[in-house]
Image 1: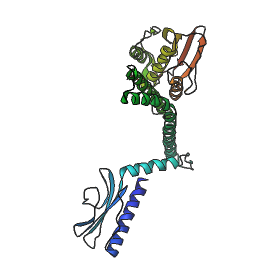
Image 2: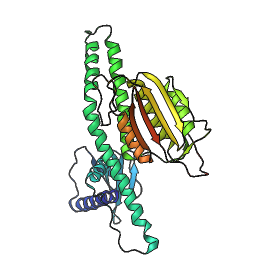
Image 3: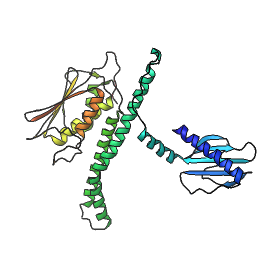
Image 4: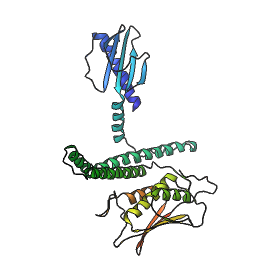
Length: 337
């Protein structure tokens, strides 16, 4: 697409050169996403918002992509440019309509087989990220409407001098909820796009780091193991654990425990009140919840991408979530970020 737009710039430059050479003048262009500079005998007949270019061909200038063409038979120079913002918008629009279906694998020599396979993998990644971007925009437009309206209402009251003493606190609370929601939406979008790496890492080390960071009392049992290597990205594992612990703190009634066992497996459990239930659907939450309704959806997406099995259970007055993680290959170096 970039080459196609460069070809368009070159064609515009050649056409402008021919028109000026024949008519001795060109029409003026309204300010916008394109511009033309014509220099005749060292004098600018029409000017452009970029500095004059000294070499023929396409080149990138601040805010512009410019093509310069000099007339070899005289002192005539044409420079045609598109704004980089316009080009970026055109590329995005083209991607929206781009056919990302898998490339058919023809009968190729065996040494060429990896080429279409790699291309299809790349197309899968592009498709996933485009879909995640669209879904993020949809989710944000739907879910941010209420907190933005609440924050805007409080800000207008404060600006008009009609607010009470608690208005600033309500505004801060609305902004805090909005920030929390945006953070969860970004986590969900990142998980849906597959923009998370691979392992290995040490399950025990990552668990300790997340527990220390959560700032809540947690009973931790490492199963008398000093290390538990798993084939999971450390950031992905930390994201899952952080969401599990935050959900347990926000929706449970205390006695939060984390147990690591052979497998390797990790179980998070906490006390719950009557009628407690896991809500797995995106944005599904109870009427009394102040959360975003995204925690378990994020966990499901990230766990699936990392090959982690997740089991949920209600046992009496306790909620339990078990993660069964793929073990790291023997001898793999583990890390925690």
